[in-house]
Length: 121
Length: 105
View 1 (cartoon, each protein chain N blue to C red):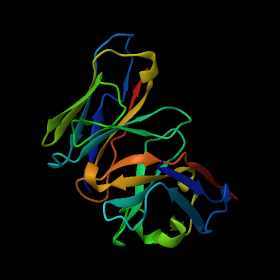
View 2: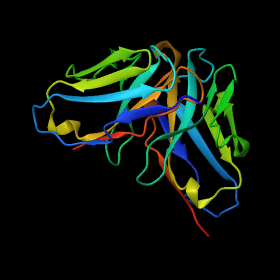
View 3: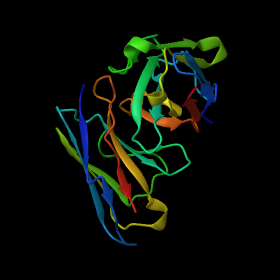
View 4: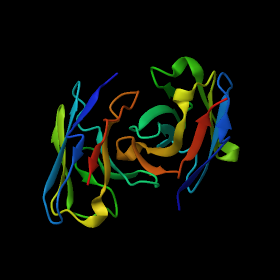
């Protein structure tokens, strides 16, 4: 059974660094067909793709956010970590981690329940 | 970045209606087009990948079509459980952009 669980702070102050962790089970980060992505949704707005990492270690970032983002994985812990520097209230929203399945044209076939992050002083 | 544009932004329909949502991409992405259903308070779910392949467990009333830069999601007979926001997404090239969503009521 594939599951993903996001964890991290509920409240972050502007200019601070946000660190979110995605803990996976039911698949391996060393599987060449797999990757993990982060998607966020500001309140009342659309889904926004943020970043992703593949089993080979290839990393990709949102064009508008890439100067503030870093994504990494720890295969032994089954975790993917997303850090976002210098956060702003516009970064408030629900952050989802998802599995990317290469055999399904890199679609996001499993999602975590999401974690709500509020950026406020 | 590839831009994804959905229409309409919102849609009101009745039980049993046939509903069609359109998604257009700024460049050819065949067949790397996926559809997701997002219900309030829940995680989004993959409905269709590769433009027309139904994800396991998704009811057959959902159908995806299209190619090139124009794609559609059709619900053949709307059910109460289908009330949600629907998103298209391209996985042709990073960043894997989403459409702005279609809210179905």
